[in-house]
Structures are given as C-alpha cells and as structure tokens.
Length: 307
Ligand SMILES: [Zn+2]
Image (tube, rainbow, N blue to C red; front, side):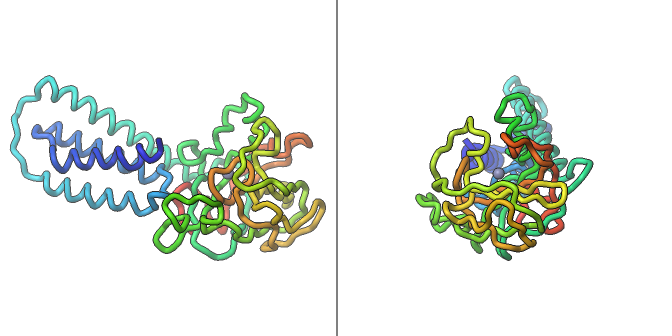
C-alpha cells in the first residue's frame, strides 16, 4: 500500500499533468494545485527508504517541467459536466494533500512540557528517521494516543519514540532492493550507545531477530532491549540483535557506552534502532509511563530527517 501511494499516485498525477493538462484555466489551476499539494504531502509525510529520500525531489523536477510546459495555453471558456467533476476531484485532492502536509509540518514542534536532552545513541554515521515527531502521520508510535486498548496502555511511553536506520551514500538502507536477511541492512550490528548517563533498570536478551512475537505480552514487542534511568526519565533502546546485550540489571552506564547492537528482534519490520523517553512505568508494564519528547544531538527528530 505504501509503495502504491508513494510512487504510483505521484507518477499518475505527474503523467496526467504532462500529457493531458486541463484545457480550461480554472481546471488547470486546480490540477496544478492538487498535484502540487499531493507532492508536498508525500515529501513531508512519506517514508522514503526504498525508494530513497531524494525521490520527492525527482517528482518536483518533473512537476516543474510540467508546470513550465503548461504555461501559455488557450482553452474553451466553458466548463462542461465532466469539467465540474474534475474540478471537485482536483480541489479534494489538493485539500487532502494540503492537510497532510500541514499536519506533517506541525509535527515538527515538540509538545509542551519536559523534554529529554540526549546524545546520539549510535556512532557517527548516515542515519534516516523512519518514525518521529508529534503526529501519527509521521510517527507510528503515536498509535498509542487513544490509550484505550491494553496494547496502547502498555506502550504509551513510546508515543514520541524515534526509529533510526542507516543509509549508504546513495540513500538505500540495504545492499539490495529486496533484502532477505537482517544482515543485508547497513544498520544491522551497529553498536548502540547509551544516550545519557544512568542506571539499567530493565533488560532482555535472547529473542531471535526477525521472528514474529506474542503481541499480547507487555514487553515482547520490544525484543531485546535496555531500559536506562537517566535522572527522572527512562530511556528505552530496543530491537537489539540477539545476544548483543552488553549490560546487566543495575549497571551504571556513562553516555556513549556501548549497551548492545542494532537488530530486528521483537515487533520490527526491518533492522532499526528504537529509542524513546518516558516517565517510569509499572512493574508489569515498564513502557506504560507518560511519554516524554526528546532532543537527540540537539534536534527534535521527525520522519524524513537525516543525520
Ligand atoms: Zn519504534
């Protein structure tokens, strides 16, 4: 579905604008605005890993060509029945795209209140934010927002969580287009660093990478992990590679200390590092505490950011 929306939809709209631009001036304006708004929405809210982050820029180049080619036209002055339908279609598409783009931009503002100041939980490298920000449109972790189901309650702490992956020079997360093994991903095995000084208050290891988990369990979604208490906040680093945990319960860690390696254990589609800050949860549901937004290496990270 993601591929369909992110690739097929803009390609169809751009081809339409290039080959069959509307003749009527109002319709043409609506077509350009509708297409442009959808491109804005995909640019700011899309998950650009494969296809990579620069894909929207290719769309913008095609859009500019289509726009330029469409300048200077003479069409019929009257709008037919089909024309009205098309006008409504383009206006609707433009409204939808504009709303998504606006929400994605608003998601760049952290919520009011406390904020956890953290270091980068990974060594220097080329990283992409797959999830992050203050709106569900750019941060899947906010599906906990309703706090109605036990799943939402048990993982409420993840709400402002960030998921990080590695990119190569070209912008791809893995060596092949359709990776088969977790180790095909560039980030797999990268050391995970404590982003703050603190004490290990929860850990788990021994979960295999890329194996489906029991979603009803209060902790198994996170796979292998370390929960670090830094001052009044708990910081979760999750989905470690099996048997990579370097710290034990009660250990004191310094900022930058290696605590594990990136993997894809637990509820994880591909190797990535999950990090979130929260107030302490309960003994049975350690990730149920009140979520806290983070500044990581001085930035409030939102989907699409690169570092
Ligand atoms: Zn996550």
